[in-house]
Length: 93
Image (cartoon, rainbow, N blue to C red; front, side, top):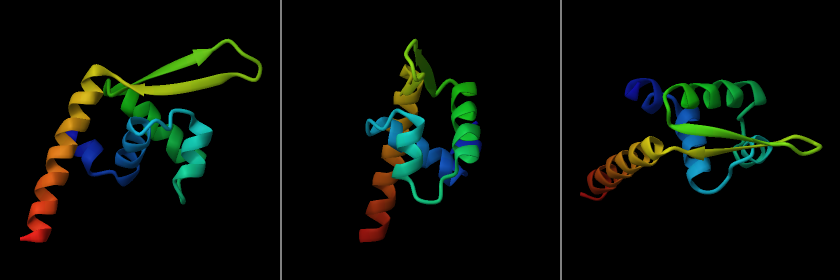
């Protein structure tokens, strides 16, 4: 699972957007140049399958869907922060 997520730039980008408060698919598509609807939907399904994000549907017209990190997703994101910190140390040193 870790390799599948960390090895995929789009999965990391989607996780980062959700963590930063970009929760709706349309917003994600517009916030990330090059990210297509098909790839976004595939990555969101993968992140849900691994238990990193939850999907919430609202009974509105037009329909509204939002994604949020799960508790496990928060922990995983914290690990990614640690990796990023190590990388910055390497780059500076």
